[in-house]
Each structure stands twice: as C-alpha cells, then as structure tokens.
Image (cartoon, rainbow, N blue to C red):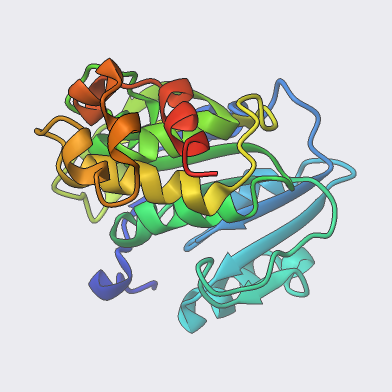
Length: 250
C-alpha cells in the first residue's frame, strides 16, 4: 500500500482514460528517448514500458515509490534515477522527450529546468495545476500572460490539451489540473543572451501594472525609454517585443 506524501505534492492519477490521453499527446511524434518525471505509483509507466525500441528513464525522489516501481516493473529497475528533476544531471546526451504528472509544488521550477535543457528536449507532455498550465499557454493581453508564457513561447510551440478534474486523483487535489504539450521550435527569435532576456522579462513583470519604462529604467538608457513601446504594460508585449528590448542591452 503506497502512502501519499503531502510534502512532495503527491496526488496519484487513477483515471485510466486520462492516463491514455496524456500519453497520446506524444503519439503523433517519433520518440526515441523518453524521461518520465515523478512516476509515483506508475500510472503512466505501465503504458510507457510497452513502447517498442525506446530508451526510457524515470526520475523519482521518493524511495518508497522507487522500491514499488522496481517491484511492479522489473524491466525499469536499472533506468530509475533517484533524485529531484530540479537537481539531477540531464539524463540523455541526445535529444529526448519528457512526460509527467508534475508535482504542483515545484511545477513552475520544472518549467525553468525544461528551459535549461531546451536544446535537447523535443517534446514535453505534462500535467500542471490548471492555473500554471494556462499561464504557460496564454497570449499577450490576458491576465494569465506572464513570465512563464514569454519564456516558454520563445522556444516552444505550446498547446493546452485538456482539463483533468480533481476526482481523477487519489487523494484529490483542491484544484483543477490541465495537460499541455510543448514542442521545441529552436530559437526563432534569435535570442543571443538568454540570461539577459530572462532578466528583462522578470523585471518587466515584476511591476506588471505599471508602464514598463518604470521597472526597466535601471537597465536602459533614458533616450531608449522614450520609445512609445515603453508606455505599455508587460502583459501587452509579445515575445518579439521582449527580444527587441533585450537587444537594446547589447
């Protein structure tokens, strides 16, 4: 009998149809290497191990769940990486895809980890708290549009796939969940310095109700800030706008 550890944000998926729908998010693209994040009780694992000719690895922090997975699925016992997705080394040296029912308490940090590994990641299919999933997929102008939206959409095509109600989990979370897909599209905006881009985006959204010239006046010259674009709020700017502003720092 598995125990649920609140400290690790564990809510185990029990709805088999939802499991199949999540996995189907990867089915229209060829997958040679796959990392499952937080497999827990193996709700997705039991389907993924059936995929032919795939280099499949799992990353799990909870020793109890690791022991359970090794007993239930002996074929993956040498493929389990013990640790947090936020701390382990990149598990492949070639392009790979990533799938998981992500722990809600670190889901935003997982997105930043994916961004760190972006040049190796082909496709991500993941379940988040719905609010976070909407933020990732939101476009300019909406209240959900923010840092996660800009950073992910700079490098990935993002799609909101479907909702997952609380009753699909044991124990049920207090929020609705959402499944999204992220497909790496390279660097179409020609971002040459990701750290500078990240800094500009974070600064701009740090005071999202103000015109962006206010938070950005500490890093941009006064004559640049006279451009009309700096009269807008952060949520009104596209990814391309943020890239253009970042280029003024060079």
